[in-house]
Length: 123
Image (cartoon, rainbow, N blue to C red; front, side):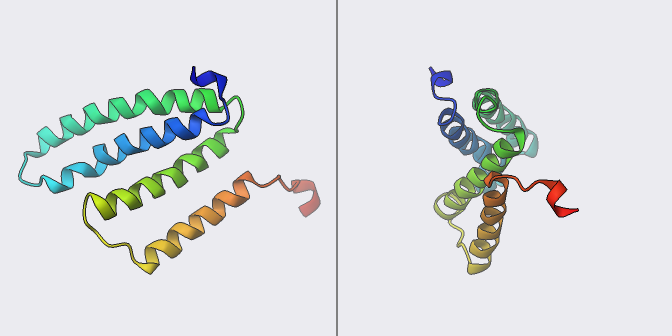
């Protein structure tokens, strides 16, 4: 099913993957009274689900995108998911510094997806 949409599927799958990844990495911060070994095991189980979406996203996406583009896409999606998670789940505020920093990362993503400039023209 997903392989029929190689340009869109990785985006959708990476969003789903990053929701699980964010909960695996940061969800336990609301449960500091739980033993560390327990949150490590639970986080690992959640991360397994994350991999079940991330691996197909990259395999399907590589038909259309370069590895650098897929990684960049994943990082921008991670920031967006994390910002919403931090705001709504952890109840933390986003500051102007966060927004400026995230915007600069998105600006970097713009250049990754922009038509390449030949290195021959630079030297």
